Image (cartoon, rainbow, N blue to C red):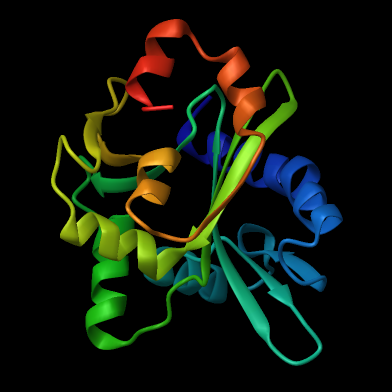
Length: 193
């Protein structure tokens, strides 16, 4: 599966599997859910996604909530934020830092979900600005890890949900026990349960 296909699958799985659970639990106000990738205006889609890191929006009666979303197809209860890409393009962390510095638009919330064999195991929701500040003020190897993707050479920050919460940041988690049950033993030790 190439990058475009993976993005499309992730976006579709978020809309079909994750978003209904978030709405059922009332974790984000109900509204019209719009996937940016599917928007008819290529210019608007590219601007929101590539410049602001916004993957979807919830249009409410009196406002809009913007979301950055990611699906992990496995049992990894963590946030991942792209640090560098081989292509040299701006990454998620670059866009988020610029947004904080210049008061540019940035997604309101970051949501990362774990799906295995089409089953939603769990997810976490946090403020995008908070996770960016956590990375900027944190220390590699202590607060987060920097991991290299062996498939494409890109690197990303891995922030374990439990460690992030332990640092005092607000995070909503759903399904941590379910994820833990499915995790390999060695991974449980790393996550500081």
